[in-house]
Length: 299
Image: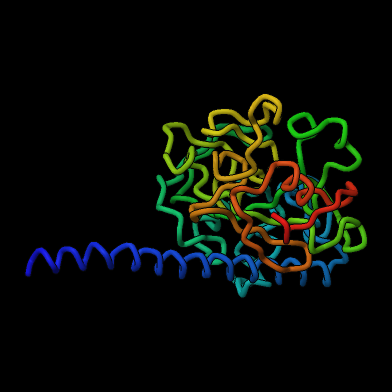
């Protein structure tokens, strides 16, 4: 009898785990949908999407400070009180802003991501000095993808005029600027677990100096591509860096879901992209006006 019970438990446990992960994956997808609605509302209110990070005066950033896109959309995520606590007259790391950044925003978290080490300090990243925080910064698992790195992907196809996505540094991109189509252009993607670094699910000893928390403006990144085990990035497809996701999370697309990753597109829809998606197709999705033709129904 005990052996039979053990056998039944062994048979049921994987099904229960799959069911729980399916629920977490749906929750993650819904989070990104909310983020997408907030970004679209921001566009309606300001005439452009927010920059991935501001370093000068722009929509939502009247004082020209270093501020990230998540702080700009807080009221559109029913977090108006939290934005009221954020001081836009200061950089994100100054004054009480780090304390504001310790307050968790559940919409910025994927429930499949394991808890990581507390972020209580950061190395200098000029003009930001070395920092210590009054409490652990609240993390984020979603980040703006700024475009592609031409030298890492294809320097013939991509250059300074066509390498960008919707949200990049100091950008003011309008719907009409997304010439590749809003349904074919990624705005935000999973880059989960930062600043703890991971290689194919394995936590590594070193920490990242970007993606410190939702309040950090310096976490957005451009696509490079990784090699098979995640030990290298940006070495070009010809030299093995041909994988688009889930090899390494230090500023590359990364999730803790089996088989792929969620991406938020400029029209507001969220799609689960399979790990088998080739790097050049992912690159095409990460640019807004490079003229590529993409058919995700065939991937």
